[in-house]
Length: 180
Image (tube, rainbow, N blue to C red):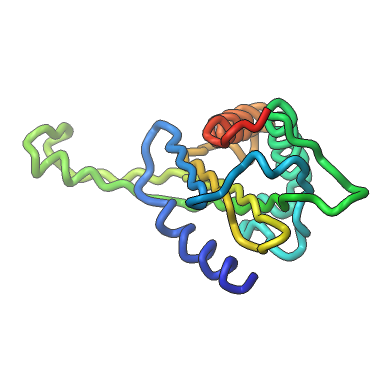
């Protein structure tokens, strides 16, 4: 599990590259894994992997909405949440919001600038969400989905947060193999 945690910590900076207006979604499936063998899942212990962002850690709406969106998508794909038996998969998530800065000096260097070609600096919040599915028999990540997007104003607007979470989860899990 320590190796998995190190990998997750190393992957987060790579996933939080310069911001853009669209949501970037990626997924990774462990080579050679037959997803048809997995039927049940449960959430991994939340205290073991906090999000790392106090604005999200202290927001029960975020956790509830995220888990609900994931459960809805997994149910649609034929997976069953279990609390009474050992699950096939444990689900973990990692979320982080980082303030980013964009300096438009590239515009000036390329010859398409405005405002007398004075560089301007813009600040924005960028959110990264990573979902991991861990095979409980091998304790290895067998699938990872990630979404990265500009999330200005999301923390203070529950409707906007709900939309962002739903879109990120739907798009990530669209890439998950079906076993129905």
